[in-house]
Structures are given as C-alpha cells and as structure tokens.
Length: 109
Length: 125
Image 1 (cartoon, rainbow over the protein chains, first blue to last red):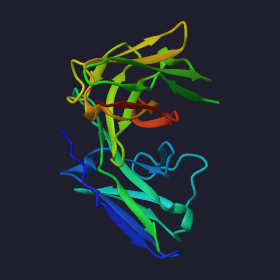
Image 2: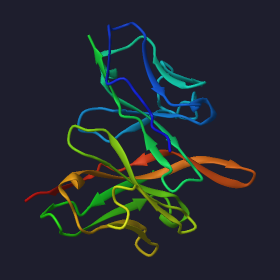
Image 3: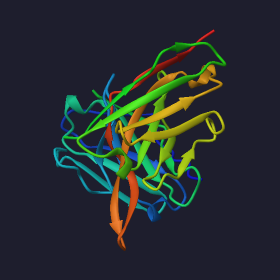
Image 4: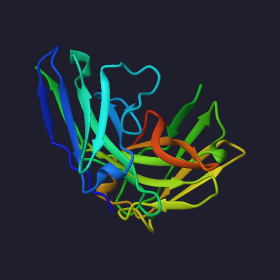
C-alpha cells in the first residue's frame, strides 16, 4: 500500500513561492489530491487530479505529479495561506484505498 | 448546497462503544460514496472507513473488526459504530463524501470532496 511522505514543515516569506512535496515510488502513476486545513477547521480540497482546482480556489494554487514526487505550489504566498497541507491518493483495488500524507505545516514568515 | 453534520461524539471509557452519525443534506447519501476520516489531537489525517454506493465497505487496519460503517436511506445518514474503543481512537471524526470522475460509464472515486465539521471522540480512563 502507499505511504506518502511529506516534509513536516515549510517556511516562506510573503509574496514568494511555496512548494510542498509528496513522495512515493511511482506516485506519478496515481492521481494526487491536496487539502488545506486551517486551525480548528475541516480540510478543504485545493487541488485535485494533480493540477485541477475546485471552483473558489485561488489560481495561486497549482500542482504537478511525475515520477516519485507530487508537488503543491503556492505562488505569491499570503499570510492567510498559513495552514497544514495534506496530499492524498485513492488506491482503488485494495482494501485500504484511502491514503493521506503525514501533512506539512506551512509557515508564512 | 451539500452539507454534512456529524453527531454522537462523547467521552467514553476504554472498551466502550459509541455510534457516530452523519446527516447529509443537498444530496442522497445512498447514491454516494461516504467516508469517515479521523484526526488525533495534534496529528495528521487518517482515513478510517468507506461505504460505496453498492454497499461494499472497507476499513483501515487500525479499526477493522471494531468499527462498522452503515447508512440509513430513510434518514439520509451514514453511521460509524465503534466498539472496543481504545485510547488511540481519541480523535476528531469527520464525515466526507468521495468525489471522482466517470470513466467508461463507471464512477471512479478519488478524493474527499465535501466534509463535515467533525465530532470529537475522547477515550479516557
């Protein structure tokens, strides 16, 4: 089964670009989804199917997925982007299809 | 508008049981793929269970044999019966729908689309 590896923390200055990675062997063969969770709130999907955005999500959020690494990119970071971010895959065909990464705390300096 | 409202969280002793419920509105629970995700205090998200529209169910190894997911079409709810509770079951429990795409006329679930606000389960001794 999949084990998705994320860095525990990423720090970035306002206006810069943040990149959060999600690693697993051959993750490029799966669809990866990303969630933002602000303090004391439920998660919200910000990127799905590697690089699609739900309606209402800023165009500053984008994703990529190739080889062994998927990446969430947040451009022109704002203070309001500070949150925990999780990657996720759905491993259909197994008895344990739901898989989350360990999460990355994004700190805006 | 799709809404999910969880209920049933409580303080319970180890070995005890609890039943969580998730009421859906704006959509039909039985036509959808419904899941439970939990988050222990200060920890990350952990997928717990799913019930597919065809009734098939799956569980994380950590809860298999102790938790049972079910749905009630008449009430438009999905429930999680939790037995033999342990301290490491302490968490916020979220109900979520699965989003996906239709491939070759078949819906393929993939991501957690709509979430409730969660209900807190605290297993203490």
